[in-house]
Length: 494
Image 1 (tube, helix red, strand yellow):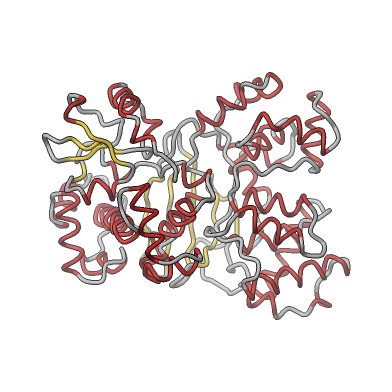
Image 2 (cartoon, helix red, strand yellow; image 1 turned 180 degrees about the vertical axis):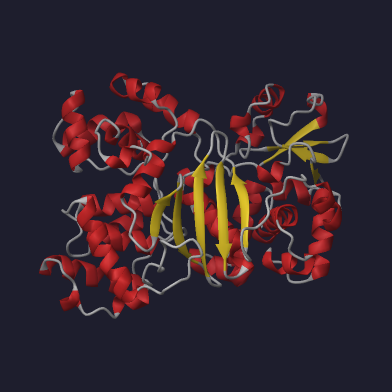
C-alpha cells in the first residue's frame, strides 16, 4: 500500500501556509473549527496547524463530515498525479471511477474489470484514500452536479440524472451535505457571466491543470496527426468526435494561460463525467510538471530544453483501442500516410455524426466494425494487414485490453506477443494509450536523430541504459527530445 502525502503533516502545513497550488489535488485540508475542507492554495488566512487535519481525497473529507469551502472550491482541483504515474490496483480503480464505471456498473462491475473481489477493492481504497468506491463515485457525482448547476440552464431533475444520481432526493441531499447549499442556492450564487450554451446539449467549462503547461507539442501533435472526419484544428481549438457509453459527443479544446477551455456537445448528458475524464486524460492535465521537469533538468543534456519550454505533456487519447489501431496503421509510414489510411477506415466503417459547425463527420470505427472488415480491402502491405486483423480480433475478444484498467507491463507483453508488433509499436501504445509515464522509444527515428544531435548514445540498448536516469518520466523525456526537430507535431498550428 502506498503512503500518501497527507500523512506528512509538516509538509502539508508548509504547502498550506505558502498557498502552493502545485499541491492542489494531492491532499485536502480539513479545518476542525469550521467544519470545511479546502485545497492547499485556498486564499483565506491559513488556520492554526492544530486546527488542520489532512485527507487524501475529497470523498474522505465528506465522509468525515466536512463540507467544501465556498472560496477555493476544492472540488475543482486537478486530479491527483498519483493515478497517472501508477499502475497498481488503487490507481487503476481510480481511473475507472473517473471514467464513470461505478455509476454505470456498480462496485461489482468495477471489481470484475480489475479482477479482484469487491471486498478487496473496498479495503484497498479505504486504506489508501480514506473512502470506498461508492463514496469516491458520490464525490464525483457531486462535482459533476455542481458543474451542471452553475454552467447550464438545465432543470434540476435533468441535472440529477445526468450527474449519475439515482433519485432527485439523493441529488438534493448530497449537494446540501457537500456544499452546505441547496442546488437552487448554488445556481443563484453562480457568476452572472455564465456562458450560454451554443446549442442544445452543449456546455462550456474550464479544465484546470498544474502550471506550467506548454501547449505546443500537446496540441501540435494532436493537430498534425488528426484523422479527417474525426478530428480537426479550427479557430485555435482541437475538435474531435467522442464515442461515449450512452451516445456520442463532440468536443472543442482550446489552450488558455491558466486553463483549457472545453466546449462539449453531448447526445446524452449522462456522458458528461466520462467525457471530461477522457479529455483530461487526452491532454495529460493531471500531471505534476514541476516534479517531472526537476528530474529531467538534472541531466545536463536535457536541461537546456526543459528550461526553454517547461511543462510539456504527453499527448494521449480518448479511446485506447482506437489509438492501438492507429499505431498499427502508422507503422513505417509517414504521418500523412497514416492519416490517409485511418481516414479511409473512418469513411468506410465509422458511424456518421452531425456536426453543427461542419468539419467532423464520423466516429472512429468501433472494434466490432473493424473486426468485420475484409482484409483484402485494406490498401496496405499484406504483413501489415495481418498485424491489423490480428490486433482487431484480440481487441474484440478482450484478450488484449489497453483500457484505463489495464496493467501496463502485462498489456505491453501481450502486444509484443502479437505478430507484427515490435518494441516501437508496443511502446508508443504504452505511452499514449496506456498512459505509462515511463514508456520509452529508443528505436524511434525522431529520438535517434535527437540523440545524435545531442551526443547521446545512438544504439537502442545504449540509449536505453543512458535514459535510466530519466525514470520514471521517460515518456516526458521523449517529448523534449522530439521537440529538437522542426516536425509539425512540435508546434501549435497557425
